[in-house]
Every structure is written in C-alpha cells, then in structure tokens.
Image (cartoon, rainbow, N blue to C red; front, side):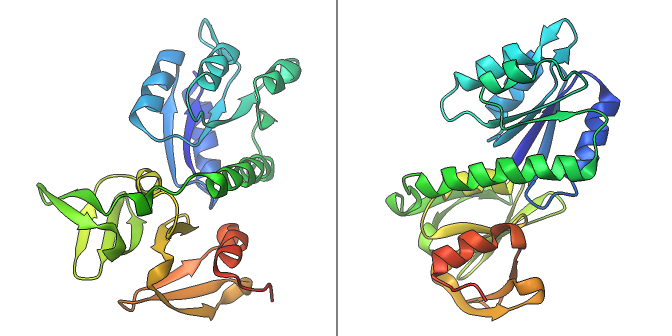
Length: 243
C-alpha cells in the first residue's frame, strides 16, 4: 500500500516511517507536515493509507480526515497521535485504527494488517479495467512506448526503479509500483509481493516455497516470490487449496 504520513513533528514522521518500512504491506511512503501539504501529496500520488496525527501546527487532523473522506475513492485512515481523548471522533471519521505515541513496531504492524485486510477486500470488488484497455503508454529512456497489456508479464520495484517485464523487452521506469497497480487494476494482474505485480496468465509454474509460500516461474523464466501477506488472495485467485 502506498502510504502517507501526516505529522508536524519531523522526528515522529521519521520514527513512523522507519517502522512502516519494516511492514511488507507498505510499498511506498510519502510525508507531509500540514493539511495543505497532505492534500498536495494526495493529488500527486495514488495514496492507499494515511497515518494521521490529530494535532498539527494550528490545524486539526480531524479536519483533514473530513476532507479526505469527501474525496472519490478515499484512502484508509489510521490516526497516529499522543492523545487518546479523540478516539471517538476519530472513529466517527471512519478511521481503521487509532495508534498512540510512542510507536511500537508490533502495534504499528497490527494497524497496517488491519488496514491491509480492508484494502484487499476493496481490490477484489473493484470493476476490472485492465482488460478494457488493450494498450498502455510506458515512458522509458526519454521515449513513450505503447505496450499491449497482454504482453506484460510482471512488474518489479527495486531501489526506487520499476522494471516492466514484457514478452520481448524490459522497460525501466521511475513511477511507483502502486501507480501501475491502479493502471493495470483487475484481471489478469495482481499483487503477490510488496515488490512484485504479476500477470497470472503468464505464470508457467507455481512451486511451494519457504514458510508455506510459493515461488512463481513466469513464461520468460523470471522467478517471483509470493509473500505471506498476499498468500490468501493468491490462493483464492488461482484456486489453490491451503496446504
């Protein structure tokens, strides 16, 4: 999930970002210190989850939550604050969780897991759009290529770069995987790992792997892991029985 942290304290943002980076479900992190900054990030990026402080400098996180909930397809909200007296108001703003400072890894993970479960449910009920478009523009090497979506095998993010693997070429782009997950939303594409999005029609082999997960072999020989966070949805998609 592409995540936005909204907190006016730099140290609090850094601490929370450090903990979120240890959560497999988090694919990218943006930061903002004000309502205006947060709204700008929400316009620039396909945000799935917002960790929001209650007290911002001369502003209220509850006000921002209200603005977010008025957006079409709003991201999920988790309040992350030092104040416990706002919990009722927070949940009235459709918050998925309420995490108190100082942050602890297990508590943050619990909030992320809860939000991720809701997010995964929303992905399964979306109307597929990828099959409605035969091609997609890919900007790479200062050129724009028109790529047929059915030739895309998988996408991989590594150190800020996203690689698109197709049947005949690889494209390196500088757009986040979460953005492409939305561009290719629905069948036959699905997320199987925080770093991988695959076209299930190009899976050649599914091999049992460590910790009851799987390793996929794509039609070009590329090996891709299925992480535990996406294991249930992958089994359901591929009609695999739990071992």
